[in-house]
Every structure is written in C-alpha cells, then in structure tokens.
Length: 488
Image (cartoon, rainbow, N blue to C red; front, side):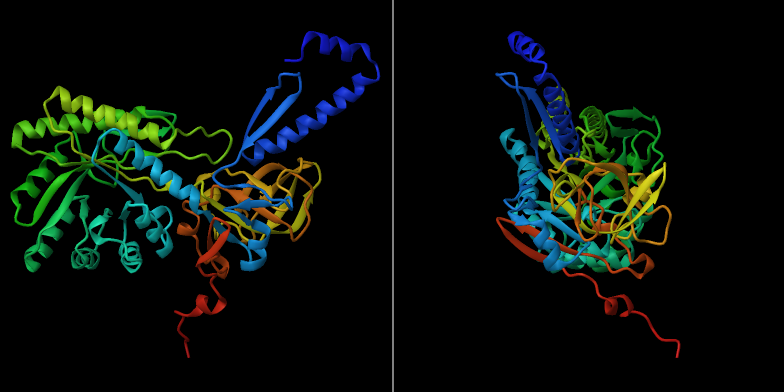
C-alpha cells in the first residue's frame, strides 16, 4: 500500500496529481497485456511503488531484441528459418514435467510407470525424448505403435490401448512383444484368445474398467452408471466377468491388474482419489473371492494444464501424492499389497511446452462489431477451438511485452466460418507479416492436424539450450498428392 505520508504528499501537489493518474493508467494498460502474456503477479513495493512480475512457462522469455524467445532461440528467427505455421516445442519444459511426475513416486517409495499418452503428440522425436527420460508410452493405434518402434522405443515399455483393436494391430503388438495390452471389451478377449492360441503365445494384460466417475476441471460426478464406449463396468458385473474369463485362460493371459481413466483437463485430486478408492475396494473384493492379487493399478491420465489465466492446474507432484496416499490407505486397511502404480499423462507433458507461430495476414473491420485478423493457419493445424470451443492466449512474438491497443479476433484461413482460433483478444496494433505466437498448443495440435482445403501440415521444431532441431518436416504439395491416382 501507499504509505499515508506518500498519499498526502501526492494530494498536496496539484501538478503531481494528474501526472500520477496518467502514470497509473499507463501501468494498468501494461498489466492488462501482461495478463495475456502469461501469469502476472502484482504487488505494492516497500516504498509504495507497484512492482510487476510475470511468470513465463518453461524457458520462455523476451530476447535482447525484444522478441519472444523459447529454449534460448528467437521465435522470429525460427519463423524466418522454417516458415509458418510452425509448432515449437520447449524440450526443457517437457523434461521438467516428466521428471516432476517420476520424482514423487521415487520420493514416496512407490514402484511406478509414468507412461506418456502419445495420442497427444506422436512423432519419432517425442518417443525418443520420452525414452531418454525413462518413461513408458501408451499407444492407441497401429500407426502410433509403428512410430514408437521406428523411434527405437523399448517395446517392453509400450502399452496398447483402444476399444476396437484390429487383428492386424494385435498381431503387430505381439510380433514386437510389447509390454502390455489393455483389454477393453469381450470381443477383444475372444479375438486375443484366438490369435494367441494360433501363435501359442502369452501376453500381459490390464482390464480397463469404468468406475462410474466423471471428472471435469474442478469437480467430479458419481454417475452410478458406466456409460462409455471404453472398458468394462465396475458395478454391473462386466468387469468381474472379464477378469474371470482372462484368469481361466492363464496359458495365454497374464493379468497384471486394472486400468481406469476418469476424464481430461482435471484441476483437482478428489476425482482421482475416489476412483482409486473404488478400484482398490474392488481389488480387495476379488482377492477374497478369486484369490486375484493385482500387481498393477493404472489410474490413467487427465491431469490439467494452463491454457489461459483462468486455468489453475496443480503441480504434477500433487496429483501423484494424493493418488499414492489413497491407494496406500485402502491397501493398509485391508492387508493388501500396494500395487505398482501406473499413470498416463499426455497433455500434461507436452501441452504447455508447445507454441504455434503464425504469420499475420489480412484484416477485416466490421464497424461497431469486431475486427478480424487472419493468420496463415487455423483449424487445419488446431481443430480444438472449432471442435471444443477451446480457449487460448497469444502475443505478438515481435514485441510480446508491448501494451494492448485494440481487441481483435484471430481467424484461420480455411474456407469455413467456424475457423476461428481466438475470439476478442487484446493485442497491440499489428502489421501484416508480424508473427503471432499462440501458447499451449503442444497437445492435440499436430496430432489432430488435417489437410482440409488441401493445406499442407506445418513443420515441428524442438528447441533446447539455444539449439533448434527440425523433427517433422513441413508437408509439400507433392506430399498432398502422393497417394492420389489418376482417372486416366
């Protein structure tokens, strides 16, 4: 706070009074744009002045040239070198997130696997990075499995998910002798048994269950039902029946334990704790009924990230700590051995590490309504705003700390009225050719990219310690037609 004597001093000096308020307005304008840059902390200093600091994610900072810098690399130079749109990943931040999840398990003495849910972003380089960090991975298709294998990822650390695995995909998984298949339905049990009997092969499996819990951001719902296309109902007898079928065919199935997943973009731990408790209770019941002792409990992913200043995710350590405490409590109360705990962060590992760079193009002004700024990408490289009404923040990478001067909406270039990346965002006045940086695009951006309107998919670059590395090349027009066949 301003000290009393300071306040009276300003009040007495009529010349200072307007200057003081002009300064205050300028400062508040500055704060306004910083709120859109990342997280802002404001406090009154010891001498009455207003101190402003803002926390950038990972290695993000402003360079000496005044440009946005990530991983020690100037983003304007990245745009010049690789073109736009361009996905940029902060490798140091990915490593930090991975180590954060692993560290808590180690500190609490729990055997665990942290498996990267690679549907968030699948490419050879990201599998190699996760291998460097000692993670496992989960895959949900033959394509993801093939990419992981080609990346040299250890097959024994690959878990295969999916509600409709094909014979070809299952055979590929068995050929590579992956670590685990997560069984999702009775059809899959029958198909797996047929293939395994033909090959005289055995495989480790987890049974995916639906615990009747839906978790969303800050709350959770006990549905009492298991209405999902994934997994076996925990309370309607399906999960128990599936377990019995698998245990009966022990020549082919090594049943490691259970898997569940309760939602996405979750900012609290209660849903995870309730799910862990319910699944552990069922393991106690099945131990007593069938003598089944699970060695693995996989509680899935869904850990939240910060897309905008309104999002308040927890640190990785807090999610893990609460899960461990809940599992331990039920285990100790029922004299049950604590199983190995697996989790599957995807978005939480790569989401905040990704930034997409766009070149600014045309402007359309609708008097009294809205100003549109178009960029050279859109729903073809980030479908989430159109699909989920997802919110994002952005800055002008050429001068990320410049105060906002107007409110505009960021339009994509696709021939689709719904192709809008950001609605009504305060930004400085911008010029065609400047670079817009949209934050937190590391998950489900490239992974869900398309060639809609025959637009080439962007390149992907990793940055770390001042070095940039192209890890996915930009598509060319020749790439677009390579699988087309002529009618004549």
